[in-house]
Image 1: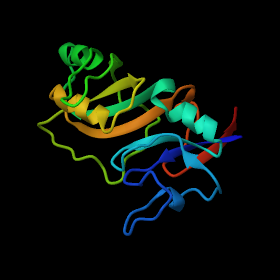
Image 2 (image 1 turned 90 degrees about the horizontal axis):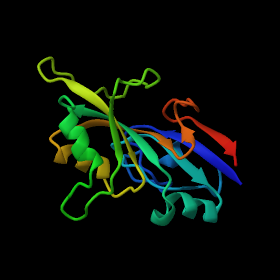
Image 3 (image 1 turned 135 degrees about the vertical axis):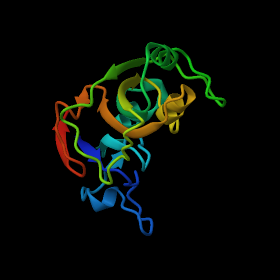
Image 4 (image 1 turned 45 degrees about the vertical axis):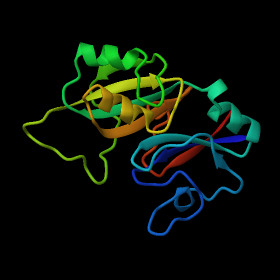
Length: 181
């Protein structure tokens, strides 16, 4: 039962079926019978898990068994204690209220690759980094959370899923490795 760790590049679709003019998982992975265990927006980068084991895929992706996922988020503005407190508490996003989570300000990770295309840079507008660890994963949740506290997301990188991390399994965008459970 192989488990594939894949570093999804920016703007790659989280599907194997082609879509005209867009890169998909099929452009990077030629392993028959594997499927993503969870999704990541095209605008997001980072760790994905893929497997050929339906039970394992269900266990990783199903809301009742959610593995903790840590997202490294570059935001527009300076993160303060009040914003972190709001992110960690249940946050009403209109169509749902988030579960409590962990959110801490961090330095930009040294192991992080430059994004292509780069994030825009403005001398008069600082950016900062937050690590947000969730045990749920609604559509565009992290982006919606940071926007709700006045810190729009500029870059979103999933750094870890459960025990697997890009810090301990360094992969450049588009690279993958197989691990055994």
